Length: 355
Image 1 (cartoon, one colour):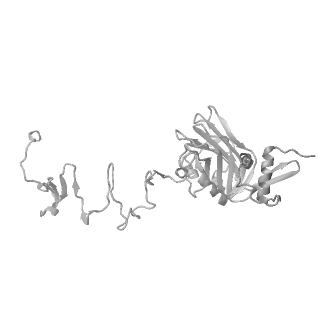
Image 2: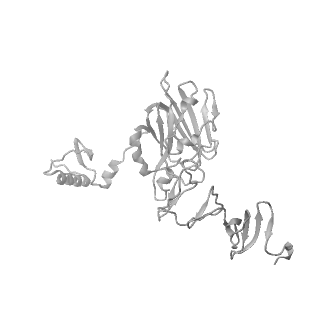
Image 3: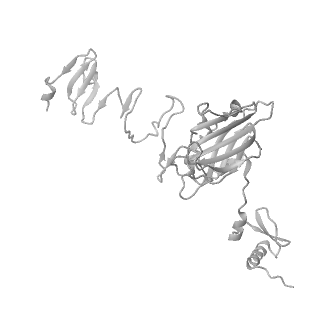
């Protein structure tokens, strides 16, 4: 009896024979398989057909624990919806009711992409257990299709419950939708709990996290970072902008907000060998010491748009201490001494008599 095979399966077998050599089909580590009847056909994944590409798509788990070292590999692929977003409200369960703790800690540490942590042991309601609800306003931000919530922890043994909700109002009461609810307790400790959710498409977000440590222990139960990740799309924001507070244009010009040194009066901007060319300032410049221009150190000299100048009186050859006013040509107009005297070269006239 001759078995009649479907055209796709016949093509697959021919390709397998060509690759395996002599009609021998071999199982390989980097391969995918299709089972027909009692026969399993195997082929390399680098030969892609629409059927085999579909085979590569695996159903995601509702939640999974990821080692914190392995987690870093997802960063080039994702935008972080919560990056640098401070919660507008934080509630802690005290054993009886939810209590507002918005000002009790620097909760923005949970989304600043830094190695900062908040010890949930400080907010435990019965020594070893805690519950926290974080409220985020996504505002008018363009939303990446975020569907992966990641909770990074340290010395937190168990995450027992997670609920993610979105709504149209900041009280989370209007058009509320539960994006994910995980009721299984997961052992995490120094890892990441990844939760697959429905897609975020509303303005307000509330995330509840319940966790605990073993009874009798003193672990601090740190929350390190909370991220809401989505795969980049053509119209999406650059992924680095959600991990690092910088943007850039096609000429590789960096675009930042406030630029602050790590310590006060301790670092320089540029050097004698690597100088910035022009500085464009829209408002004021505050200089704590001397301003040096072209090798000359200027002590408080000011030049105005109309050419008038204010300089130290000693600089124009006067033997008095004070401030000299010079015209655009550098001629001395007047001097105000340190004694309060006014010395002028011209006539004293009434203001209304001026040209």
